[in-house]
Image 1 (tube, helix red, strand yellow):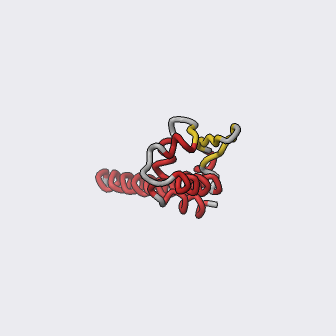
Image 2: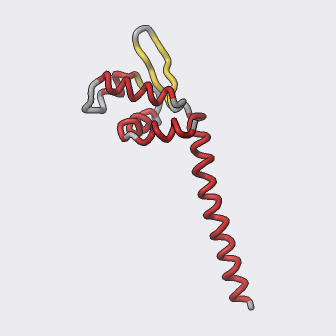
Image 3: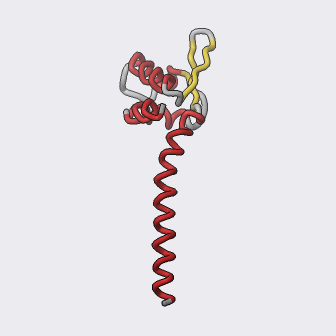
Length: 104
């Protein structure tokens, strides 16, 4: 699933859609107002984000409302955190080694 998430967020328009949705639910037409691309193109981007689990859609009559699905980012966050944790551990080990050298 992480591959689908990464594929989804590589595209700049999709990242901008996610940024818009950070503040809450928006209709597809509200989202489209922020772009210079066609409404069908926005719909395609929203479908990719939905299929990767990053957004959920709520239908109300003919309108569709989208919001962030925070759980969809969980696996990506864990993957990225592992790099951060490794870096912090190496930094800690280097600092401790430097402290030992100073105390010798």
